[in-house]
Length: 364
Ligand code: NAD
Image 1 (cartoon, helix red, strand yellow):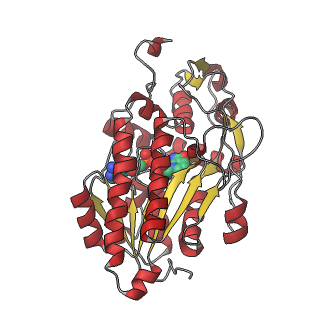
Image 2 (tube, rainbow, N blue to C red; image 1 turned 60 degrees about the horizontal axis):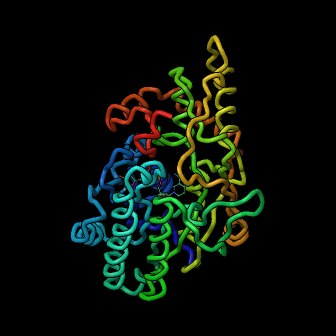
Image 3 (cartoon, rainbow, N blue to C red; image 1 turned 45 degrees about the vertical axis):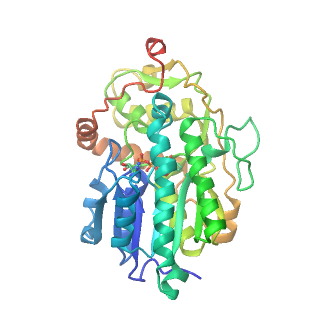
């Protein structure tokens, strides 16, 4: 069955829709469908609604401020929003914060996913046969659940789980819960595991925005370890294409790996951004002079790479943005939106400091 997301007059619930990827997904749904979009989010330091508020169709967006840790409130939110489809993105998402304090990650990513699955199951069982047949629950996860690669090979849907950080362990836990609710209760679940995203509106604790803002402020650009850790980067709009396609046409029970085939070391990312800023925004010395290697992240995974063949062959997905195009668009967006960065800093209280080292190690 193909789901008509664009013209189906659907009620779509997104969890974590005030976050970076969730906001981008909601904006797309508001702009390109006639759906009513319900945004269940606890509204945390990482939340920002600007991308949604800037949509001319934002009257079809309904914010439900609920913490998934609370089963009663989660159940009520599902009952009242009465969704045809659920995209589950809410999660604590920053590895360094999970090293500093893992507990909120267990609460949101594991207990929160359990509460949502149970609420969704009760809701799904109460639907009419036609709505029941169309209902889907799409769980958005990460490639980090698969662990760390050596110099060769790629993660795929068949890679065994081997999470190594508190963040990835809790995301792995949420994936397993989804699998259990699929097989035990037949809840129609589709799962995705995506590589590192980047793009406009990403909270400035993540690698790409932090490099941009440290450079613009003429501050030290910290690169963990020797800078050779590799991530497979994907422009966020290409991830949104994949999520919508997986929801529309994905097979119930399937798991789709999504990646950009853009393997870059952290040092290459920093150098790309510095070179771009040298041309766009020249300063009296090259920005790359600000790069400094700092103490590595504990348990820092060496390399991630994704084999996206399944979603490409089965669903016809392909990333539209090359790494260079996507990163240029992103840097240009941040340059035009310095006020967004300043207000995000004010609102969240996060000023670019290092997170996730023990107190003794912080000064190294
Ligand atoms: P984000 O941190 O920018 O946003 C997460 C949102 O979830 C926030 O608005 C937060 O308030 C909300 N949230 C967290 N816990 C909640 C709870 N208990 N109840 C209600 N709301 C809660 O994250 P993101 O980068 O947009 O990532 C979204 C999802 O995609 C996550 O599940 C993440 O694991 C996954 N993912 C992210 C990436 C990436 O590179 N950013 C890559 C692959 C997968």
